[in-house]
Amino acid sequence: MTEAVTTKRARVESIDVVRGVIMILMALDHTRDFFGNSGLNPTDPAQTTIPLFFTRWITHFCAPVFFLLTGTGAYLSLRKKSKRELSRFLFTRGLWLIFLELVVVRCFGWQFNFDYHLILLNVLWALGWAMIVLSALVYLPASAVAAFGVVMIATHNLFDSVQSANPLWSILHAPNLILNDPGHIVFVAYALIPWIGVTAAGYGLGQVFCWESTRRKIFLLRLGIGLTSGFIVLRGINIYGDPLPWSTQKSAAFTVLSFLNTNKYPPSLLYLLMTLGPAMLFLWVVDLRTPQWLRPALVIGKVPMFYYLLHIPLIHLLAIVVCYARYGQVHWMFESPSLGQFLITPPPGWGYPLPVVYLVWVSVVLALYPLCRWFAALKQRRADAWLSYF
Image 1 (tube, helix red, strand yellow):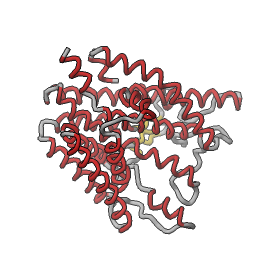
Image 2 (cartoon, one colour):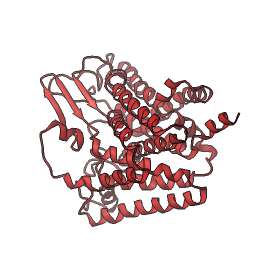
Image 3 (cartoon, one colour):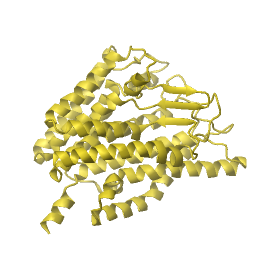
Image 4 (cartoon, helix red, strand yellow):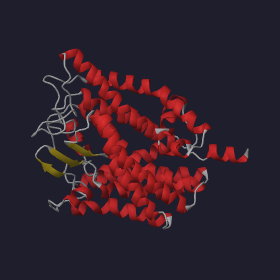
């Protein structure tokens, strides 16, 4: 009986809530990918609108928080695992995530084909490698792992000026094509160095969730204010921390957009300060109690990988159905780009206004919620090893 209670209490509810919220927001970004106007850059003040900008901007929180909390969850699992067991789990799960990226998500999520003319090394690719690196770092003290991550985050922009055609440099720091032979394209979207640092910093953050509540809440509040203030100050100085300086625009509102338009590929220091600071404040807010209206997010946050693997094919399938109903044929993005095209080949005139994008997004989340609730209950009832990989 004691063992069962301990197992149930092993999860930290506030972490699951925050993770669930960012997973829900992630579906908004991917819905916009499939149903929005792909010809517009939503973060470019010269061509975006304020609603479109913030539709994209709010989803910037997803990847940093997910990588951070992956590290935090790894540290907290030491309550049930030895460091050796944790290292082995992180290594094997990292390999599993890379497999999911290259096979499952690529073929059954983004592209709906098996021709491999286009390979996109995306979020699960980077998360897998971050877990593999963390599998070695866990033998160090948690404070040393955190320091490793913080230094990597704070200093990697020093190398922004380095220009290299070496594929390894693209994999580590500068997202780019690493293969562009006739008919075959491999593009690195998520460079590894910054994301590995975020995961390592998250591992160090895991210590905080072992403190008593008052001390933990004070730390999270101070950390959130500190990171957010650091973003405002450094961004205002406009010298270091992001390869794209902000500039005065046609109005005060669009100047604010320029200020907030930080670099995600790879995630700059300022991008990470901008997203992780408010995330710490959110963790502080929900630390001791989950508001009733966030209970559905708590469910999704308990099964983030299960949700992730379902939401992309569902959105893609909906787009194909709508495309067929509208055009009488399926000519769709992420399908099978011909030579000279890259990634997105929507049919002529495709793209719906934001209200439609939001309606589809809400519909997708509502459709997935019962499945997530079922799978979360299954994981709570059973302790099969395979369940920990989803």
